[in-house]
Length: 233
Image (cartoon, rainbow, N blue to C red; front, side):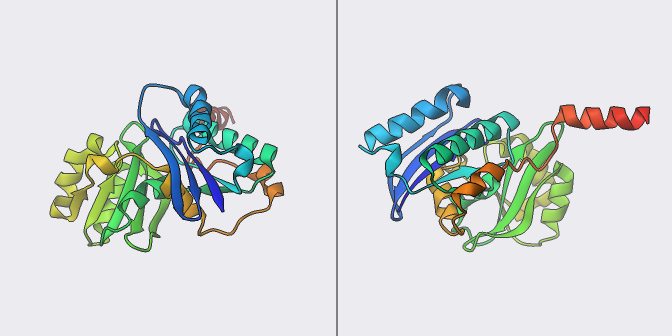
């Protein structure tokens, strides 16, 4: 079975082709190029290097969020368009779990996080080896996350390029309980995205229409509108 994986939930971009559990080709990059400009050319390059055609794939996996609203939206829109055009099933995977999977062999708790500005983060916690969710994807102030993680009373490996923003604060709160993944593990990989997708049941092609991003937080404009409506009520 041949999978195409698309990961654009944040600034890094990764796309991959995996056939029967083997990586055929993969692109992982973190350059100043918007996904609306760079994603499709990266996919085309992937197929060209692998001497394959889009019609050769059997399924598509996409990072469904949370993360950058723009990044998630672009990836999901691209994946849905390709899946419907090719009539292939589409499987969504948490972008936080994709990142955590880089450290799946860690014997402890893996905590991926993305900066959500104003000291807020998108985060989750997974148990190494099994990738079982200990703390489901959610949006919180960094202190709220650290209190939840501290209560686990286990070693916690923080992973993601945004961890550096909070590293000093994490060390202050958690001390020796906190560990930090090396820079080589900080970018999400579409091959890991596919590895997680293959463990899920393949949905029908008709379900592409109802596939939606998982932002885990309403947009700021929507939040402001709701606040305004309450004030005017």
